[in-house]
Length: 494
Image (cartoon, rainbow, N blue to C red; front, side, top):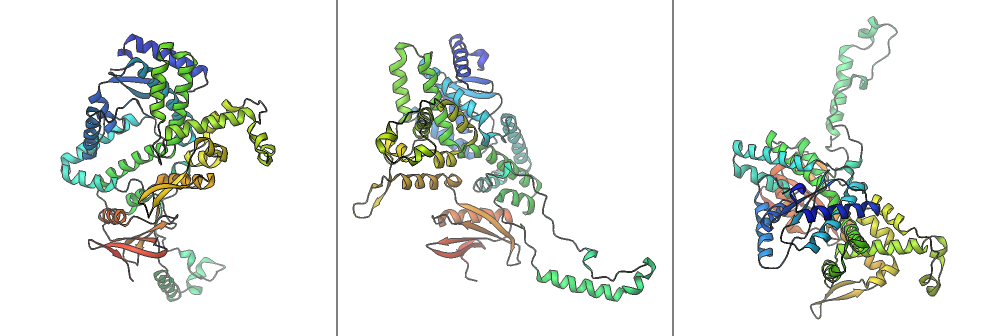
């Protein structure tokens, strides 16, 4: 059911929500709402919001989990919106009217973020069609090569889909690396005043000896692929792994989809906080009837609940936007404010600048979660939200508060957000030990690799690369190299 088939009351509601959003300064793509029942919305959610995905068991598993969660009353999907142009969003037909109102307002917040945040600027806005295209191509390969062979290869690709470079879409494309060829200009030839004298001053035996010396020198100099450590390991495999055409195409699909979803991983706090901020602002600015206030407060409070020791991106995001807005409204920034050491003066500081709304729009445009937390997470904010870090007490075997120091809390958050919590790994050599084996390097950032995950990942990389793979890392403070060779995972001793 499309927007044109929505009940009249919901069509009228969307018109009101859109008008209020535009009045507040939100700049959105056209939003197309689809009305689905709970089974349909679970199917779409299993495909990350896309109705057409390539066939794979993980989508069936996700659908089964969502369906059981809904039937047992453990979870419910309130809203789902896709970063496309036009922007597609889904409504659950069993939701009461107040829920539909909240969802529409929330969706317009997301849509504004998708359109205007810099980190989404390089994404494919026609990904709905591209996902359907991927589904057709994968089904064709399954018909030709067999369902099991294709699905098994997809399993291996999905296990390494995080091994991409989040900054690659914003870089200039590089020229493909090629093995250097012999250049006649490298030969040490004597200059000749006339061309006919060249054969006399540079005899063939002399030039042959020059070429032999150059070839011997090149053999001693190991040619490395890649020339520089490469973070986009999927691209490296597409260029250099011995893949069949269909395998390279499947890997390219997984890589394309990974880059599409990448900005959502890097802006989860900002994106959900922005949508929550605006659903609250739009509804309380006049979209709510008096009879709906209690129900709205109940729904909104449910979204904002944070479990002890957890981090709710909706709650953290909305509160940090409100904190920024208040600071810039009152002028709590700049040299004078930072150098003020009187806590009473700082608490009552108010220059009545009213720059808060403009500031949060600027923040929404240029930041991601890491820079958002790094720049705007302050001591005052940490104290207001009563944030802390925790750890296991070895004596009581219970998690306990470790510290409320705002710098340590901030550092912990940034560590969790760096590279979306994944280890930072680069491929440094595609011809390790001169045996066409792959060597990866883990850039240690304070947390050791999980060796069980490393074993499974290296096994899948070896299957795609067709040769043994190795990873250099630091484990328990000691530099080590682990390899997956002949079906065995072990530490390299050589």
